[in-house]
Length: 82
Image (cartoon, rainbow, N blue to C red; front, side, top):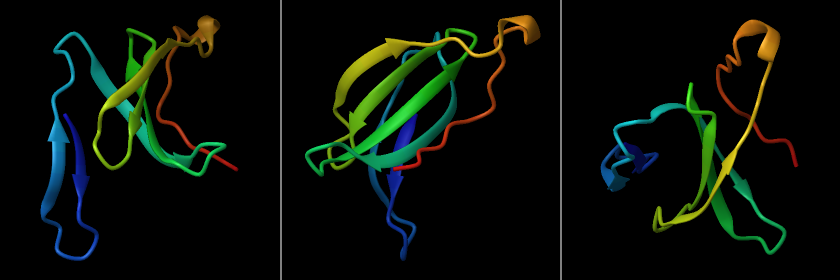
């Protein structure tokens, strides 16, 4: 699942399911070049990532990635530095 939680009340603002073949490894918020809020998520083993609209959680795009092949393509999360 991808969930957006209200930071003060901790109420669930929005939630979507991800396909069961994926294990969500990490996600982070960022703003794109146009100032739109985005959520980027990566998955473990499938090496697939997703970009979501941070307000609606609509999936906007999907991508593949590699990390460290010599260590089995393991990754432990994601960050964003503007």
